[in-house]
Length: 154
Image (cartoon, rainbow, N blue to C red; front, top):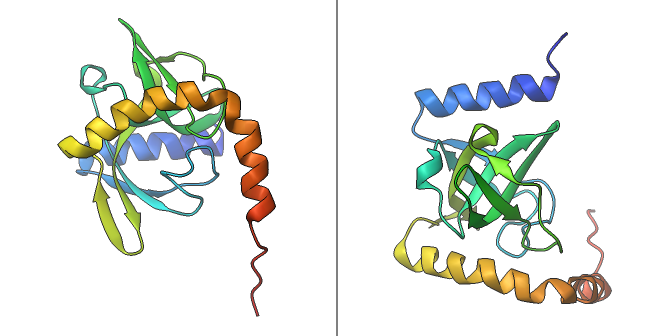
């Protein structure tokens, strides 16, 4: 059976992470809003399973889907991830489904290192804050859409 285009791209990304220090990818979607926004560029590096911690943002691949979500819990052979802006958990992620870890985000031509001590502390607490705020997400999403003005290009 032929590999899908997504399978081929994931294999290319994994190969690039082995040969290069890190790679640049563009975020698509708003599931990690406000930390990562649609169209924003991030740097991803290869990571071993034992170097993933609560609060880290990892790139995973399963069921023909690539996700960039935050780690909430670590088990013996899996991690539990969740999108910051969505209620509910993702399916458990095993070590072989982990593609890499987001280490830098680029915003307004400025690199923000997500590996600093301050960013790691923020990420740890933010991971638990998202759990507490989950029931409010439908309301917050409605409010964000209500105040957003349409953008036009001329």
